[in-house]
Length: 313
Image 1 (cartoon, rainbow, N blue to C red):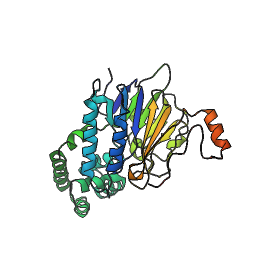
Image 2 (cartoon, one colour):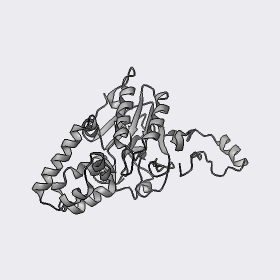
Image 3 (tube, rainbow, N blue to C red):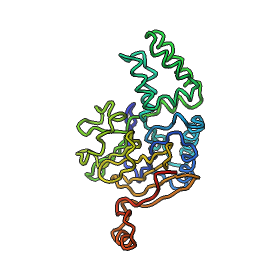
Image 4 (cartoon, rainbow, N blue to C red):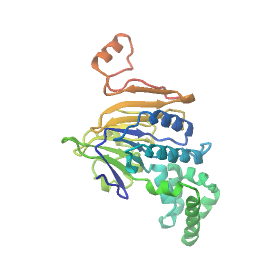
């Protein structure tokens, strides 16, 4: 039986894993992706959201959370589906929000707050109608006053239908079970330190993404997939470390990668402007296809990564 701990989710041995990159408040593109996945998702598939759901400048973050909850309920209504088939990871923004709720324990609350806001916690303050200026002022108060204030933030979260349950369901990472001697597939929010075990990653999962693509081999994992790149380096599907961040919420498309249980990227779905969906095979593209496209002068197409979208919506 697959297990779910307070930190990590065991995905078992799925047929396919659909991994949704950082959404950053773009509810319309998420809804379009959900409509596409509704007809594609099968029993024995898994759906993993890689975090960073909200954005400071998004029009209606409440509607985005409602979209997440509604689609989850729709999938679970299918025969054979289990709650553990759908996983929501805690991205840098969600981790920063949770740490903001414990701000009274930070050695320097004002400095810690600035870090959390930069990582995306401000979107959650705006979600619950909390003044940013009041928040910064409170961070300079004493620990008793900060504790009273963070307790009020928790009340606001609990009073919003569905939010508390979603926040409590967030996990740090998701990983498949080994298959036929092959490495597992690991899904993380933003970073990974190859020199540490999964249990010892601590901040590296959220704030340590700078050297992510320097991970070229790992004894435990066949593929490591993240949904957000703080450096905005774009999509990278070559090698062991995969980045799916297409810049959704910042002008780029919302991406969803479909992986098999061994970590091979089977398909990429991109939702661009005006609800446009582009989808293409990736590591199933044959050498014959590549040779044909090369003769036609399409130098941007390769067996591993066909060009699907532009950087802008």
